[in-house]
Length: 363
Ligand code: NAD
Image 1: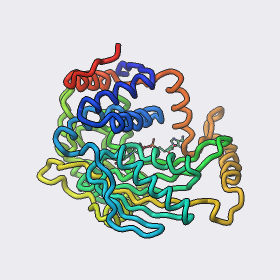
Image 2: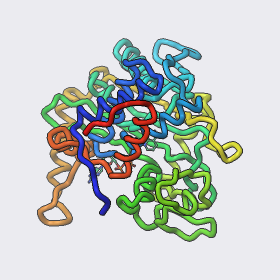
Image 3: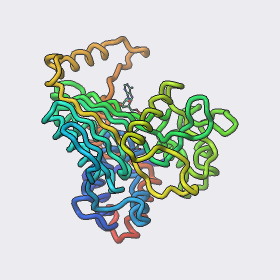
């Protein structure tokens, strides 16, 4: 088990925000990036949290993600819009696109927003939670242009990115927040990254080799692993595997059609010249005002059903059945109270990035 470094949530957010401010973002944008990266750690999705900081700073310096961007409206109607994120930070562009969907759904009861060319949108659950906080149900289908990592069911060659899907349901605080938020690969790429640094191993069968054999070896994604060397998925010959056989593979395929083709941002494909020009997420989102539908007390009904599901007898005596969103809510409560554990390697990498930018590393 690698050693961990525990940092108070607020301190970590301030530290990461200071790094982005020193790297060239405005104070507000830096604070927003720090907020959403920390939010992923608080939810327990460390693969999409502050571990991304060195990579994001490198992308900023290489012009692969741009500071200070806004949405450009490509086309718009009363309940629809296609918007371009102009390769701005996902933590800046994501909230703008979601807030547009919220405004339209509040006015009309329903809205669909196709976002293209956004920088990495991180943990998609943040966008489902933002809509839920506004009282809306939301569905999100995400792809990564030119970011293929995942083999289709029955294939060995990469064709999809890890294409997350998220469905968020509003709560009145008396029930667990219902939030389904998952990659359509059996494991998210960030989890292979964590495993490649000596963290929690990924399950057997998460990767497929070019000869069709399944494995759990991160080297199949990144090529031969050298300690502390950057991990580059363009160097590996294998692929990630979709979850749930043909079913997850089918969902990943549809994320490409909705997030990539419908938005006009483009589907996953070979990383040009083996070197990704920029990371670009596409996201097709639907926002629904439950008050406009005939189910009566929607939140009460959802709470009642969640409680019924949770009352299912557990497979393992003494264990508990959880509903989507519950593990994240529990981890958030724990980490807000007790601090955020980071792999030593992540803490060292954050410190190195901070020092190159003249940012003081907290004791
Ligand atoms: P995961 O496998 O941990 O699944 C998480 C989902 O399953 C959550 O909805 C959670 O509440 C639910 N869940 C977990 N354990 C449960 C249990 N015991 N009972 C009931 N429900 C349970 O997540 P993942 O697939 O590793 O994805 C991690 C994160 O990566 C997500 O936040 C996703 O948005 C993000 N992601 C982002 C991108 C991108 O391009 N921006 C790409 C891939 C993944």
